[in-house]
Amino acid sequence: MLSRALESIKFRNNKKHDENQYIALIDDIIKHGDMVDGRNGKTLSVFGSSMHFSLENGELPLLTTKKVAWKTCLKELLWFISGSTNNDLLNEQNVKIWNGNSSREFLDSRGLVNNRVNDLGPVYGHQWRFFNADYTTCDDTYNGKGVDQLDYIIKQLKDPKERYSRRLLMSAWNPGQLNEMALPPCHVLVQFNVLPGDKLSCSLYQRSGDVGLGVPFNIASYSFLTHLIAIHCGLKAHEFCYHLGNCHIYDDHIDQLKIQRNKEPYKFPKLLIKQKRDDINNYIVDDFEINDYKSHEPIKMNMRN
Image 1: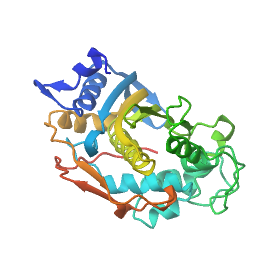
Image 2 (image 1 turned 180 degrees about the horizontal axis):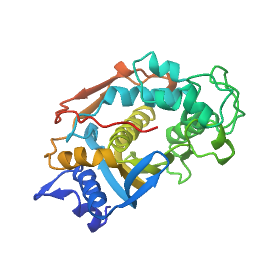
Image 3 (image 1 turned 90 degrees about the vertical axis):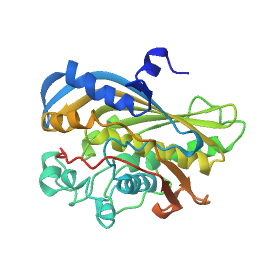
């Protein structure tokens, strides 16, 4: 159950909506954040925030106070699940969100002079599926190497005797390989938990959250993941619990977010996963159907590398 304090921030103008937690975070940062001159620009920042989103009855927390490019988010998630770190595969699907971190200039700035363009190093997918396997290039195969954290979680969740384990964690943070990554992971640790009634929840800890651009994607991505794993393992999606460390707004996003926070949220859409596939690697974008997604207009913000 949520604490009274956490439950209260779901209310705004006497109306309850899970998206109000996100609006409250924007308000908190704008009112109380400290201006910090960081690695890639100036940010207003606070430290420590939590949000809880219901996933009951197919609900999907796609923010509605601006339009979220959910297909882009889903394509990236399926790419993570595949274990790939090859940005070419995203570009082929017209997904450009990793381009700034996979250019020749950026890779060289990270000391990754031997990585070809679009080779991101052992980022999320590699750690999810081949944790700590020695990394060579994004074009090599790693089957049978390292630890397949996602496969372990799925096997445990499918076992009625093991699904209540408190050890169902998946880490993208690997200190031994951070210097090989184009970008160290922001969303670093996820835990799954099953309650009586086969209710599956997911808790994410994220060390760094770009509130304007990244956080809406992260909410959607891990909600998609929870729904997918629930269907795949014969469970029911229940809740996504989101815990952030450094929460920040870039200085050139402040005005846009001041506009967004004054929008009234619409009802969240419903997600239908149209079929259960035998292998978690075999799901495709067309397996996911979003119904009744109504949002305000998109809000343009510059992306930082």
